[in-house]
Length: 551
Image 1 (cartoon, helix red, strand yellow):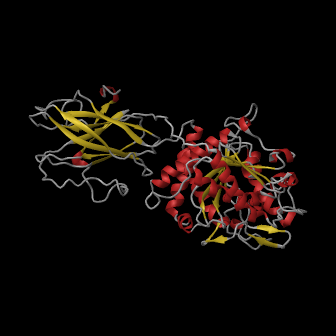
Image 2 (image 1 turned 90 degrees about the vertical axis):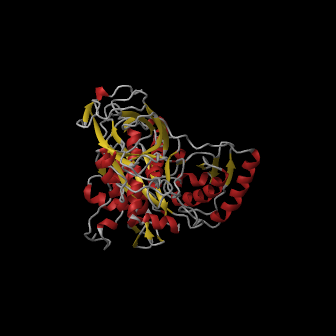
Image 3 (image 1 turned 90 degrees about the horizontal axis):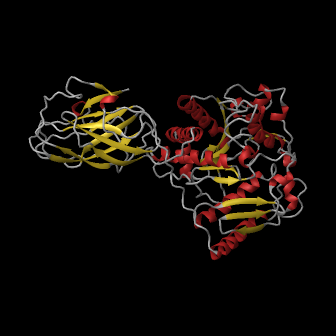
């Protein structure tokens, strides 16, 4: 492994940056007289990453008064959503909804024992409408609220013949005797399905703000598959077709069809995947079978993880916005995956020009009633990329730059999860110069925390440029290495000792940067530029063994 040496006069301040600096983090234009005294700079190459964690958002318990106020608000706000609703076959009466709120922010909605047998399949969309209204009000009290649906006091699993795996049953490692594929399933949500009551083909989600979720998410799935292949080196299984040929039954392109129909052609001898047992209520048999086909395919292929891509919607609250991630309640491994994905999405989206303020939730949500997660026998997360019912989110969802940034985030979150690393801010913790110079060069060590995507670029410049010096900004790309990153400042041939006030930052390949960190270089004076050293004018690489003194 070697040290690559660069000179500032070969990396001068450019009119066109290698990658754009974000607003608010522009380099200084010192505006001082320039003279022909230059500094030189070089980088040391090492491998490794640190593994500190993002601080979890502070979850503050509710006071008794807050509990009562929130419960009263939810009872009032949810009442109109249940009047006259008949969500499952043979439902006669309105749901006998009971709301309770605990100090630890667990909100329980009990829909009555009669609804229990219908909870997993027939009530999912109804649950979602209630959930969005609940979280709209719960979020006003702070982060960390969870919604738990009950049926006569019992969880959904009590009414299903084969409940989902939970808790520590879901492992990243394979069970004894079972070989798990390294591939992951990436499911773009929805697509055309056949409605058995209306006797017509329908999309599973309506058009909002120029978006039909069924037709938007496949592009996101392909984007994610590209990055998982390039950066994680793993294969991706996508259960929907990308063919433009026409499906003979529906008259629509195969690429617009739900996963169930594509899987029927691929796996005709496995109807348990695409024609599973499901309720026929309200003509939605195919709709429900399509949703279940995605996790059932993941189980059949024994993939390592399942990631379900959706856009969100809330007609009751068009202001609802942002990216969210959802895992199945009680599955701690899935929770880690969901939070890693969400954290990494926020990091890369916010480093992308135009999306610095895009709302990305700080903590993943848990739900117990989503079949895509609950039926998966491996870590599974449902990613709500943004709200198609929100005009601002919809504009972002249609933007190819946002699509790339968000899916890079999903891939990075999954990769960190599989490597056992926690998502953490990319920051410089300290920058210190070594008091022992090497020839005319002062070594400087930039210590960082985080998980940058390489190659990265180190940028260093003067905070104050002395009148008798010509000062430059250096931008130096470097490949993967651990903290600290060592670079070198040439003190030149000044006869007197002097200190130079500098600043440095590191920008990774996704434009995530550490922000500026100041440092001081202490030049001893009386340096002979012709002095022979490991970093003289004729040396461009040096063995790592020459780089002594790195803590």
